[in-house]
Length: 303
Image 1: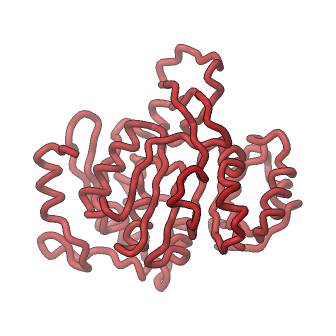
Image 2 (image 1 turned 30 degrees about the horizontal axis):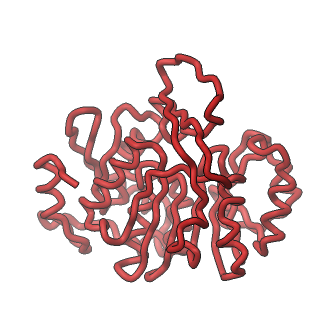
Image 3 (image 1 turned 90 degrees about the vertical axis):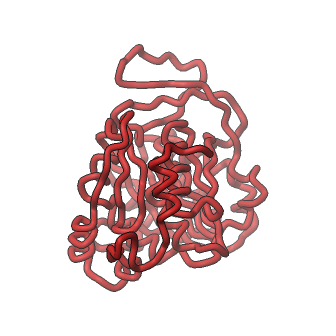
């Protein structure tokens, strides 16, 4: 891939060491497991910096160690990365504990690649991260960010929507909140709202990727498509291999949310919730279904 000269220059000078360019001390990932959240957030904010590149693109430092291309018109995610340098620290901490060198990891709904960058660093050259993002603009920015950080051989970006069948769908993306992009049937009417963009695309099953049949960890944050994605990875689930899944669940998204939970348990997974303050806590089917219907519950599923 060709990059503007400024990005090529950055890529050629960037090295993954505890000390970065010009002797800048980089944030150490071990601190996500050994230091307090308050301390880590303060250190990362102090290391946060950004440079505007034009055309609504900015280069910023995230997690005190990675260079990342973000969208200056994106209110929901990029603005937070520009100001703070991190996103969802509670999930960042968890992934730093779950992901190990040599793993095969799948990031479904990878967005700009914040978690993809972290997991690529954690799996190292002996592992691989497969990031799925159907939004063309986000996928291209993520590809650039991975290359700038030297992860182009450790992570693969799939500009692909996932479901349980191969079919045509409509990707609808709020222009100022691209992380809330979602899939609709191809014939679904879409308003001429200037705040949304849409395009037709073809879905694919996750288990159609042979290289993912032995995945160790799958993160799914796909805004209404979680059940279809789960059904589309039955070839992975039926192997019975040890597997960890991080899944965003909101019961209003499913016609039968209780049935979805039953399916998860039948596939051999224990249920736990990833909470903001208390970390990972065991949970039950009843507790998950008792949450407000619009509330996102982040589940940790392990077998």
